[in-house]
Image (cartoon, helix red, strand yellow):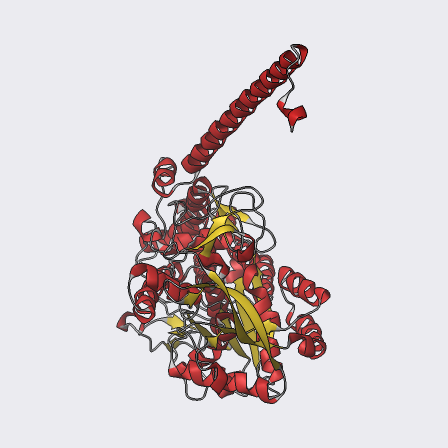
Length: 640
């Protein structure tokens, strides 16, 4: 077995003794597809720029994609991870009007906020770009013109509400008024928050512009529509093939099928705005491309801003597999609109291979709400003083893969204390401290056959196979559960073999084997937790005095006798259970639920009181009518 001196980032690793070709360096220069490797292109839904992402947004797209990207790279696949802020559209233009700044200034402001949030969560993009670039305009217009040349665009007229005060057409959600169903006075043009009914802005009573309160007027406007109906037969053939080969997530397939079952219709892809990609037709030069036609093309343009050789990724379906991560509300744009746009150009495109979609993460039984100050948003997590890896761990364990899940402060604290600290942290700390104290930090010469190594290896290989299978099929939560099984197996291994001073004194050969095999399991553990907990993985290899390592298929004794490890350090710290109420008070949640319940109870009580009052008034009226009738006076009802 050959020993190699690892030429790594730190001089302290120069004398590391381990098998060759297991090191993993996450820092790679320009990444391009290679003929001899599996090439994986990864995108996470482009977050809309004019808000701060909350925990549900983070787990639904960027964090999930980050885990898969890190896994692919640590397995030796050639992977590129692309994301960026989605910056065009009505919401940006309107938000800029509200804040009294230009749309560009608004985008610049929130792009920085998003990047800071993702950096803190250790989201390692290869390129985090934005859609407001010249390349976005060039590529989006080229796709638009390709569709036009092939007869997949058509012109239709639309009636929209127009605000004469600030001179712009209003998106549905920027029209407010009285709900025609329940009378709620602040209903939006797309939905009433009081009764929950879906609306259109023309149904509202006394509609008003959300920006300035003025009364909008209906206006007709010509627009360009994408002829999805013409593209549906070809799209369905592609979906069937992609779903089978790429093993789409269940909800992704169900949502797509529901659209196809209803039958696709032409969809408007232009808007009466100034802020967006200009429509490249002379008669439409005062309009822009609809943000949801434009946004998915952002994946392509951001890649083009990463490398001038972007076509090697996006026009290379034979050698590249595209994996896309998002919340379920974004599915149709990635499985219907964007693929139809690609197909309609009649050019060769890298198209969706696997779609990974999540349901919704709720907050303490309710919804995240920035306006009501309920929930943890990306820039709040840091305020708790809890490290990013703990947040990553909790969110990934609560990842809503098949149904909605709920963020709970109690569960958050429990998982840190009883899973990260007591399971993972305990295993690593226990064996490293033992080697520090009893072996002068050095792995001894050992014979693995001094213990039941074959049986132990078989159990570890079984867990590792579960882990790799889960990650390969993008079952991220199952993969993390397998990683924790591995550390639990390590704790059991130390317990079974009674690693302590007595073992060292009475059975030194067995103690040496336990130490040698155990430290190699710690090294394996650093690799399998790396996609999920990158800081923790780095903390483990720092204690082992080794580089990061690739994720293997089988367990092996890669750390060799004579290797000197570093000093033990705690990977996690205990969170006081009292923090639960403190954080609830700070970020809403349980207290908010109580307030809401109290408010509802108060409203119900008032409603009953009003009903009782109306009943008494009605009874009094009936009695009065009866009295006047008996006295020969004609009742008002009869008189009418």
